[in-house]
Image (cartoon, rainbow, N blue to C red):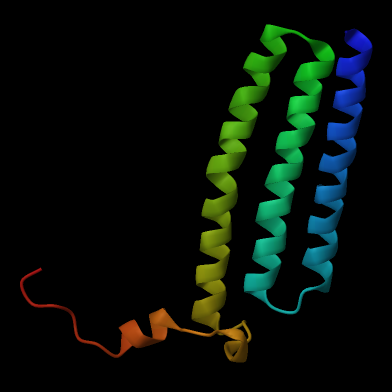
Length: 118
């Protein structure tokens, strides 16, 4: 049974490392901030999740799993938050490709006066 778990852990680590590699390549190759943020958050977080699952399976220890769960929860909390903050600042600075936006809801919101009474 241990050999099967080690094989599954190996496969998960390889897939997780591949996802992290694609995230790094996407950060380098994509042209504007929203595309880079997509590459930095989605595959990187999934890659880390797969690697942490592989570590838990490989070590077969509840204290290790108890240590890995907060790491993943913190990653799930901070990756979208940091991406939002970087994207928001890029929008304010105008350092994004405006032609790539299909709908610019923030630009539409700038032109409307605030609602009364609320």
